[in-house]
Image 1 (tube, helix red, strand yellow):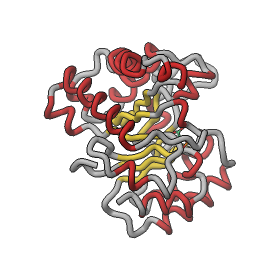
Image 2 (cartoon, protein in one colour):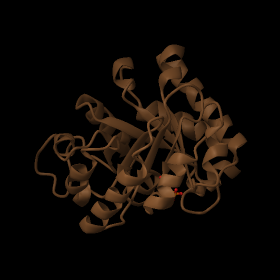
Image 3 (spheres, rainbow, N blue to C red):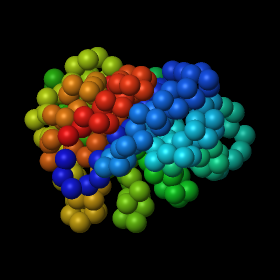
Image 4 (cartoon, protein in one colour):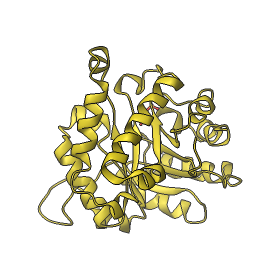
Length: 253
Ligand code: PGA
């Protein structure tokens, strides 16, 4: 886990209506009131951001969005800008999730534009990277991650990098119940940190939190988080139920 404050984030994906999101957030606030040693974030769908933000006001849980557009305003039907996310109470934004890369034509270039826009507006990006099963089998994991990281962070200054959180999510482990072993995860996280070191120097690289995501559950979080370069978790399915997510937050060490 290293000595950075752990960060545990829940990505609710396309689940929950406004009422359901508010009810879940209320329970989570209650269940996690005693948590001080870990930063907790939830990312509901866009439609629930503002009402959930009201619920989180009196808690330490922060709010994140699941995507962003890079322009501040304009004729871009359906898109949501950085100032809009800030006005809805967001502190963070997930960028480059593999589901967006896979189903919505997200590329390293659009990811880069989104990260630049987010840091410009002081929204902290959770920058997702990860290889597919085919890429892992053909031993391309390291080159894929190298490319995603170099292209995704192109032009990002060291100062802006202080706001960035990286999430390693092997695509084959997302929503599949297949978790990478803690050794596999540590190996990749160490590699990602070495890439960050190459671009931003070792002091800054050591201060960047690298989360693991992919079938994180209350039963495996502790083992994963015990690894030196794992500084938190990005949780999908298991963050939808407030009891389960609270167990993850409580059981990480
Ligand atoms: P999962 O999703 O926990 O359901 O595997 C993780 C993610 O997509 O962020």
